[in-house]
Length: 147
Image (cartoon, rainbow, N blue to C red; front, side, top):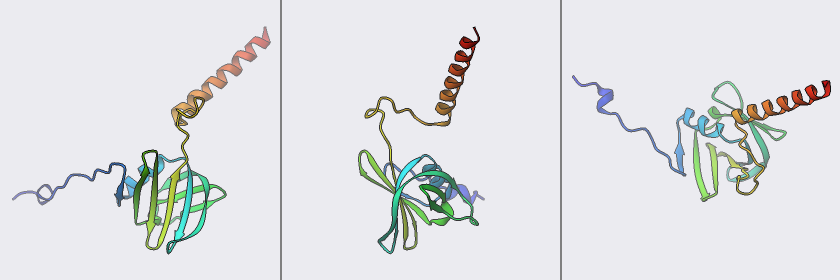
């Protein structure tokens, strides 16, 4: 007897630039990469709130709320049924978190490195490297002052 799971096995979804995600871990992984966003909260197609903010946490917990307060976004992917990805131009993508008649649209606010040569990627590794540079420079100054 063949294994039923292998018989019905389908390839994993592949989303390129636009589409719909229903898997909570896929949604979490995608939203986790966003940092500063413009958000638009609509209910029944009418804008309720909008603004700019920083995504501080993305989590998957059925007992906690999604919160958007004081330019801080704490997004619980359990608050939404699915994520719709819309590429509106080659440079801009909108992420629509949808739950029934409620939509939270996230629009990344990204300054490309081409536009600003001083802009650096603020990944954990780069922040750690910058901190190490600052601490090393401070130590050099202290050593210079001691002599």
